[in-house]
Image 1: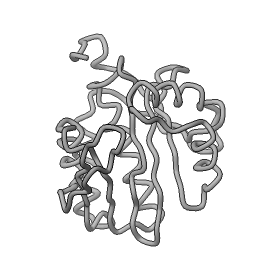
Image 2: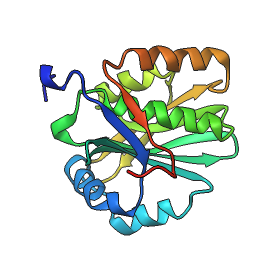
Image 3: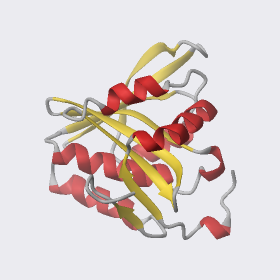
Length: 186
């Protein structure tokens, strides 16, 4: 979707994902991935809150994106990130990545990692803004489409330099991002 001037000033709320978001999350999942995660898989991920963090991006009351993080000692792994096709290219994924990166650091991460389709140059460009660099290739990682995954890694995410990077990325988002904590109503 091309950038729409009326979308330039979107006020997005980022909130912890919960059960009531899953119908919308699974709908988006089915629209953007050839082999989508099921509701039960999302439920099992949400149950692992000690090592996982999942968030939704809300436009008003509508879920327009979501993202997940898995912690393993001092490594944070981006498990998923997706935006409703009608709302892509509006910096919603950027906002979600900001929240994931900050949550990973809050939980003690010193590095972040992820896999991304080799053909997904737009996502790779966004990840580079967050300091991710390619470190390897996983052949046929996306078996349903016979696509390779580029493994990307960001080191030293617990440093003042990385905080400055996140602040610069956040400053590039044209409108407010509100962050609800676990206790706030969504």
